Image 1 (tube, rainbow, N blue to C red):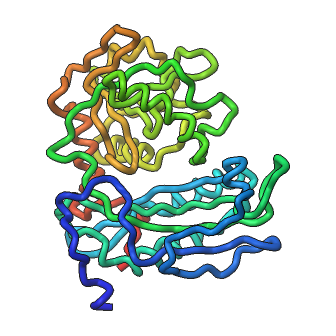
Image 2 (image 1 turned 135 degrees about the vertical axis):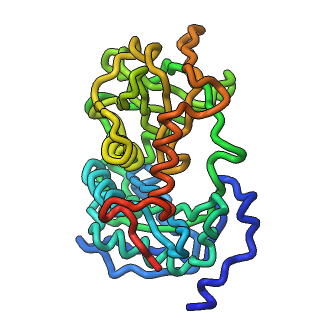
Length: 345
């Protein structure tokens, strides 16, 4: 076990958010109505038919979570049971056979243990990003679900999302729609992210960091960005998050809402948020696995600027408290609610 635990020779402080191949990944195949027992492999390549369901009709779903070293030296993951449950609902929506939730947790544990040398040390700001995913693997030429599937988990060490502190970002109100009201916006499917690629590149070309998507039905209410949920703070210190059936149920957002109520004693509302209200909020943040919370300094709606009081230099005071409390829980500095921290070793 000592040789596995020996850390790789990596410059942890200068890691970016990009793929670095690690030693092992987990693979399980679904054939003739059942998943096989699964195995760890050193082979980082995927071999599938040129006519595979994933290549023809985008039949794929995925998850994202992190493993990290806590202050007392344990390697842990954060609420992986919620990732397992979300992958199940995503799979059902795309007619992919469910990978059992207990096996999901076990596969994540196996991959982290086998790549323990890639888990960054405590205090480095870096983490081990874990990517479970599944896809239709056999030939499908008619429009229908595949008959065979592959479930895989790989991991890669990634740097802190914010290098040199969390500077507020500028976002714009987008003219494109991310998800339809009864579509797939509430599951983690690759096709949702493909839809957002042109819009995010268009935003970058125009000098913005991200897009704010409004609801596709009325284009009057705030939904989310291409990869994160919104969290607002009112001038009287209330935390407000958008409610919609086409928003991805972010595990980070749900955790922040709990922290706001139970740790910080704040009032929290999850409700429909008309865009018209945004100008009256005191703080705005984007929440997701990668950054926990990215502060937003400015939202531009076709030339009209909404500037938040916290400005373009730092997080707002309540956003900062939320960020510090949740990351403190994740890193073992603050006592976690029961079941939130899953110790791997």
